[in-house]
Image (cartoon, rainbow, N blue to C red; front, side):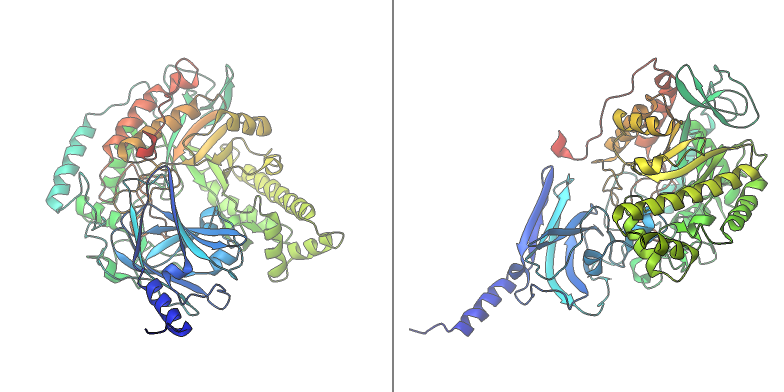
Length: 627
C-alpha cells in the first residue's frame, strides 16, 4: 500500500483546488451573492496581498448588469462595483488601491468615484475600504438580478505590475452603428435601410404633433402672473412655480445633455469596434479624462441621417421632439441656442469648480480668487444677460466633499503651499479634530458661495441663480449656507424622493426645489442600468411617470430634469459609465415606451402640482422578484 506523504497530499489538494476553475454562479432573487474561499479559486493565492497591486480576473458575465466584487477579511467585506461587458471573456486587472484607499479628489461625484478601464469599468462609491493583509475569500453580489444572469470565472491571480485589461474573446463588441454586437432587441438596426425607414416614419409623425395650452416658452396658457420678460419664481396658493417671461406658470420638465456627441475612448481599444466614425466628423469629441480623441457613433448616425450639413436639421428635429413629448427645458452639455423655435435652457457655470481646485474646492483665500470669479461670471453671463429663454444658471455641480471634510483637509495639507493650506494649518494648530476640520471647510464654503453669488448677480441681474446641483443629501450644515440662491437644486437618484425628504429640504432652505438629475435604466442592449434600476423598458417608462408625478405633488418642487437625452456609449464615456438612460438611443431612435410615458405625465402636471389630481402610485419593478 502506497503511503501518502505530506508533500504529495499538498500537491493533490492544490490540484483539486485548481481543478475547481472555472467556477460559475447564477444570480437570482431579490439579492444574490456567492463567496468562494481563496483556495477554491487558486491554491497559490496568499492571504496577505500587501505586496501585490492588482487582482487579475478572467471572467465572463452573461449580462451587463453591474455586480459587487468583494474581498472577505476578518474586519469585514471590502467591495467595489464592476460594470462588465456582456457575453465575452475579459481580463480585468483591478487596482487594489481601489480597495485600500479612499476615492480621490475629483471635481464632482462622478469624477471622484467612476474609474474607466479597458475591459470593464469600476465604481468606488458605497463600499468600505480596508487593508488587504488577510484576505480569506472573494464574494460576488448583485441586487435585483434581471433574468438570472450568470458569472463565470476561470482565472484568479495577483500581480505587482499591471498586466493590462483586455477583451479576450468576442471582439468586436460594437457594430458600425454603435450598438452592442452581442445582444438583440426589438428595433435593433441591422442596416442603414432599416434606420432610414424608421427615421422617416418618426419625422412624418412629428409633423402632425402639436402641443396645446402652452405658450412659446412652455408655460401654461390658462394661468397668469406678473410678466417681467425673464423667468422668475413665485409662490402661488401655497405652491411654488417658475413664472415664464410672459407671466404664465411654468413647471420645468427638463432633459440633460441635449447635444450631438457622445464620445467613447478609442485609443488602444480600436479592435473593440467594427468600424470607427470619420475622425474629422467631431474633432472636439473626447473619450477620456486625459482628453484623448474619442469616437461618437451618435454623431456618425446623425450624418447618415441628414448628410454632411446635419446640425441644423438635428436641431429642428430635437425641438420638434421636445415639444411633442412635453419637455420644456434643456441644460448642461451641448445646449444649442440656435434651435428654432427656441427651447428654455439652464446654463452651467463651472470655471471656479473645475480650475485649480481640490475636491471641487478652490483656494477661496487666494489673492486672485475674487478676481477670477468675477472674470468667469462676466465672460459667461454677460452674453446671455438679455436672453429671455435662459431659465437660470447653476453655479456648480455635485461637490464631492460634503461628508468627507476631513479627507478634504488631508488633501489640502498634502498639496503644494497655498493660502488655504496656510490658514488650515493655523486653524488646526489649536486642535485637530474632525469637528474642527468640518468647521474650517464650511467656513471656506461660505466664502466660496458669497463670492460667487455676488459676482453672478453683478453680471446678470435678470436671471435666476439656480444654485449648486448638490448630489443626494449634502447635510444640514451645508444646507444652511445656501441663502444666496433663488432656487435650491439637488440631484436625487431614487425611484422617487420621499415626501419626508422633500419636506426636510424645504424646511432647511425655504426656497423652491429643482431636481437637477434623476434617471432609471435597464441592464439592456449591452449597457448597465444606471444608478436606479428597472427590469425592462416598460418598467423604465413606469419609473419616469412615478418619479415625475410624485415629485410634482410636492408644493415646493418646481421641476424635474432627466439625465439624460441620449444613452451613454456601450464602451463607456470618459469615466467608464455606459448607462441605458436615454430617451434616444445611439441610432437616434426614441424609446417609444419612454415617449408615451412622458406625454401622459406631462399632460397631468398642472393638475398634480395644484393638487387637483393625485400622482400615479405605480412603482417600477427592478426585477421579476418583485412580482
